[in-house]
Length: 403
Figure (cartoon, rainbow, N blue to C red):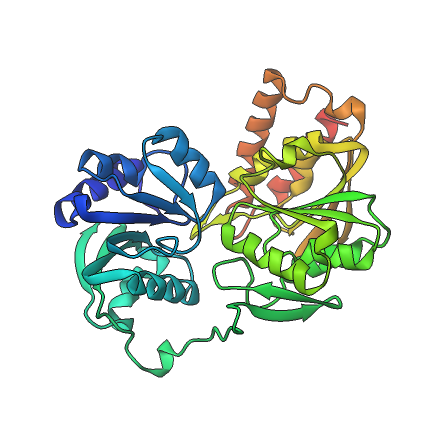
């Protein structure tokens, strides 16, 4: 369960009463939703005019739009490398990602400075008091909690606190798959091992997918780099919302000597750079989490934009959990949709663009119909068990309504 907008507002109102907001040099946000309410609303009312450091392009865009008077920086370091008095930071998802961010933030504090750490109960914030010495619970409202850590806070030694993250000198962990090396770091999807769904998708593409392709939601860059390695004439664009992911993808293409044929962008969806390009194919293992929350919004916005970004006859390759019937949504934007591969857990989908199917996809009637269909799809596929019969019913309805 996640906090609603009113409880979020109450939490940050309470935060301003216990945290020296006027002395905050930096606020670091990682997975916080772009929709209101924003923590910055209450913080600005209480006198915050420091720097906002965000780890996602979508967050940077939203904050620059709603808070143009604040300085917003896109970086995965909590202070973008600066030394400061007080830091307010959202707790990253995952034990190792949290350790890296907390260590970096504490190292950036001036003497007597404090790190103010907030997060939902599901994020693991309750266990930090056991992992670190000198942690104080400053505020607890609903599903949100605020902790205070000082510049002398240290991690408590113990077998449960032993780090599993053993990076090389450059800060990356290296994996090997599909005859290439992959650079990863905690905080990105499947950082400890190559995701089996991505392996399935890569194995399903037997022929060169064209001259120029997009790897959307690229993560470590495994799919894009794997295809660039397999097809020497291929030009690959890799894009992700998360700055840590594009850092990893950039390193992945460098160590495999693929950089001359690869471009990498940190942007929200098919954003200002990628939207200016056209592709013969798009490959994706689409995200459906934002931090600890399930969120299909990015994929929903991506599908019509993907159809628009493809050349006529272009192909979208998508892999997803078998419980999520992406075929229902793909048929809204692609004339020919088929299951190309799969196993017990995942399905590889292929959608082919034709001019007749994608022309005028953005009209309001289509948007309303797609939104209604999406609501049904989320209701069916977001449950833990899933309702296979209802999913089949929706799929059949879609085939009849949009042959």
